[in-house]
Image (cartoon, one colour):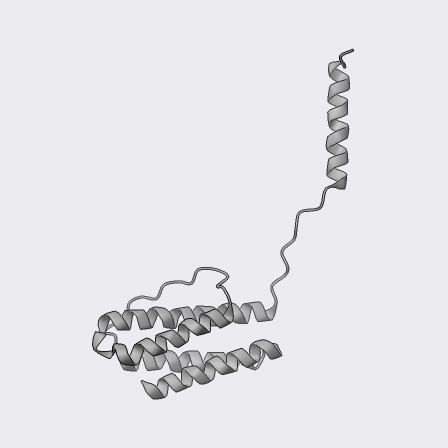
Length: 142
């Protein structure tokens, strides 16, 4: 015997209602922590330095031996910080790329990493302090 249209519709509503009651709620994203925000800022700074060094290497090929290892350090910093949560804005090309301009960017990044280390969790603070020290050493090299 075939169910009537009304019976079929009623059965469908019952099945959908039961499924709605028993299905898992939509997963919620974990709230972002202060460390997440500090890490994102550090990633953006490091990506900015990678971009600046890439531009400088193109503009100043005679300084490849000096700049390539420093660029490698920034790539390692990005790896230590973890994947970037969102694409970073691309820096405008360095106007008349210069070692002095790179040193100024390094100095600024070192200072901000150090400030952020003061308010970060222990684990992130250690990483940020290490990055700050490395950026400061780059200033001396440049």
